[in-house]
Amino acid sequence: MKFDDASGLQNASWPAFVVEPKGKILRANRNALETFARKIGQGENADLAAVWEPSNPQKLEQFLDSSRNGSAATVSVKLAGQNGSGAAWLARVCPAGENSQNFLIQFFPEPQAGPGDKATAGDAQAQKQKLDCALQLARTVSHEFNNALTSVLGHTSLILSKIEPGHPWRRSLMEVEKSAAKAAEISNDLASFSRQDKEGQNKGGGNINAVLQRCLEFFKRSPDGEPVTWAMQLERTLYACKFDELKMQQAFLRVIENSVQAFRSGQGRIILQSRNVDLKEGTQDRNVKLAAGSYVCVEISDNGCGIEPDVLPRIFEPFFTTKRDKKHRGIGLAWVYGIVTNLGGGVAVSSQPGQGTSLRIYLPAEKRILRETPQFSGEELRGTHSVLFVDDEQLVLTMGQTILAEHGYKVETASSGKQALNLISGGKETFDLVVTDLVMPGMTGRELVEQIQKLAPGTRIICTSGYPWPPPQIKNLAFLKKPFSAQELLSKIKLTLGDA
Image 1: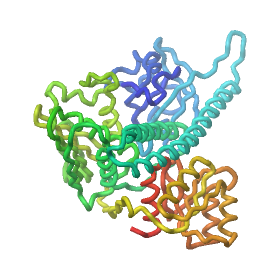
Image 2: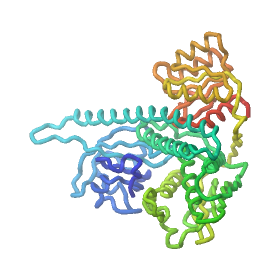
Image 3: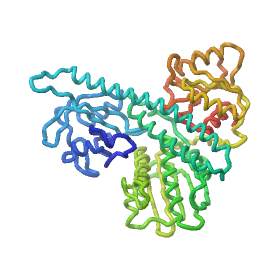
């Protein structure tokens, strides 16, 4: 019941918890355990309600529910300490992640009056202002970090698409790409923590098949590991389900990586499957209880060494690993389990020593079929249209211009909304497509889009942002989340221009 060290909260000097809507504690950092351990309980019985003082204006469940419905805020509350006496804290609440029903709560000691001093409301207000400044800093860092990662990921994926599989630099570039993807995940968590509203909660359904196909391409490009035969058995009329694509991709990659490492010698075989599951009544798959309803099931199976019966029940425990290499911290499958269960799903595993392992991920789904997204590669990614690329970050502008020009597009760039409008209204160039960042100083991306729709209503537009989804005022526009790879940018352009 601890935070992953990568979250940045494990060693924080203040208590932090991830809790369910009714207060059950899912994770706690070191300071939280040291401060409240004897009160909150242990393991599955740990509950924040045990330290929630009755003198608080709301019960814990009501407090969490009100936090869900409004903007995140810093609120003064009282919690029972180790000695049983109540102490004043400033509580900061936000969603535990995109599309998550759980909460991240951080508690900061409320300033108290010293001997002979008179406590004032200004003390608490000053502390709140300090915290708000820290949150603003986190938002700014996340935004700038995403821009830098967009440049790194875009250039790296472009070079990888150009060099041969046996090139001596290919392995290093693969590591750069993996590191950029991991950094993007951390940046996304930082943005979720700092955000004061619930952007992204209404995110539409995604297609799991597209994520699985990207994962397969990732491992096919890798020169490492034992020889592997890959097979994909995908349901073409797959149900829609809600998830964060970056996190789900990382989850699949970690499961597949375990399967690749399960081959001790000889030819290995890994099968990636997706299918729809409709349950008229509740059922159980190994360790997972499934309520009646519709699910998308992703199954990743291999014919590797398998898992010993005494080890199998422990594979989702944080920091448990059977690997001897020190770089393996044993948080991979625990991380996968956390992502899936936060979405209301479950992870089932069956394995026999010497015969292989099968891991099944169940995600709640809607009985609504998504149109299969076309997959482009090679020459299919090329085009001849005229594109205006708009971003206030020069690194991103250079990356976009390089990728698009390399693939045949006629590209102009603008570092501000005003400069973009001058190019559009000048009449010297007619643009088939505008790719614009949403968060820019001066004229925002949203304001730019509104002006483009007035000046050139037939122009296709793609909005980009490090935030999970464009604001509700922008509708019927294509969206590409930062950071993105060269292939993701080019594919989104193809689809938006109707070249699929």
